[in-house]
Length: 346
Image 1 (cartoon, rainbow, N blue to C red):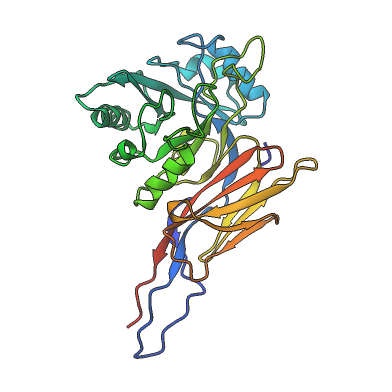
Image 2: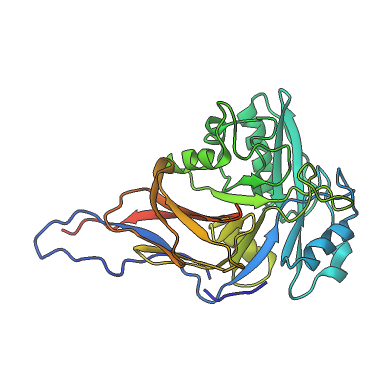
């Protein structure tokens, strides 16, 4: 995959702010929080895939080879309540491809599936249950955190398991599947149930800092590739990190330094104190349209330009995220950039 330069610590960029005249008061001005991403590169990966170790149709080596051969830089094998030791597949790992240990902690509450992925786990983690749905989800998130893993909550709309009010009560989670490639997952919602983007905006608008993941949830690597089958290649992320190392990738994921995609590639995402700029990778004669979205899912600006640029100005939204859609229906979701305020001058 093509990589682009762009560390890590979040810093508040205050350049360009007007200074109050001596002795006068000035209203606080909204600015973006700006990541220090100097020297970082993009790495494409998938964090949700299954093998014969649980309910997939192919052995771990074949699954890993599919992703490596299709230009992915990293993969998490996330079988249900099974830990696959990447060390057994070390011959596949090189300077351009990394296997990260993981597991899909799989349990339920009152017949509602509760699935939480654990990334960078040291061993199998037993799924947990509780007397409430919120407690069951929380206990599995906590189980991943207890072994210094990174949790992401999987497909809430699978069997309509749980909604936005439940997710708002979960703590210590920073990653949520907003797109899952399994044909039985209702990413767009339906009836009186919201889609995952609406749920995401609900959580963000209430102050929850959470980032949107796109995944394959692939099970079927053999025979036909078709809409009714759970095939690979449907949802992925591109993470901006200092190196292709597990800890670096995990840090960037939990800081929102990535975008999620079903096919749209981005050259870069550039953030200053007052601008969010998205540089889209051209693809054939495809056209693109970018929507910049703020609190409660409000569209703040739309453009067909490339780069697509949002200028903060006097905007007082709590966050800005972006959605790039191409003329074939593929999408890239840019993670929310949050606002911070400069204290009023005295």
